[in-house]
Image (cartoon, rainbow, N blue to C red):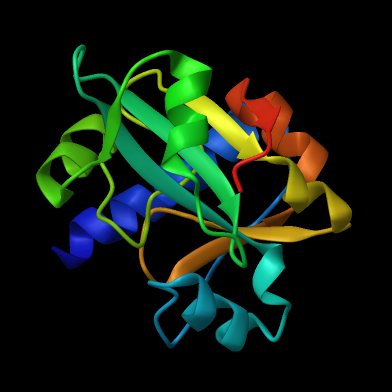
Length: 159
């Protein structure tokens, strides 16, 4: 398991480089499993945490990635409206199969499959944000505008 986690972290770092970004993945001694854990570990505002949440469309069973500001609750009704299909929060097995990452370490990039992505507009009030990097203890700092380039995500209101 430790080797798999190291591989996931390296996969995210390699993807950042491949996409032309010089951001560096860092590993922390404590968990960043939740947005609150991450904000505490990084001494930043809760809203600066870009939490990657995977949903599953009910009819087509497709993954939907919502990258939300750590201080925001995702309004699932809004996401349903954006994709014109009912959704449900994905379970751990689905998340792992679709992304290659465990819950708490889902990176916004380097997923196993192409995933429809929505980015919380509230992340853009910050100059820098933090995202998970393949492990519940790995993160990378980035500019919100770069999330668009990295993910081809659509900026939306998720509240």
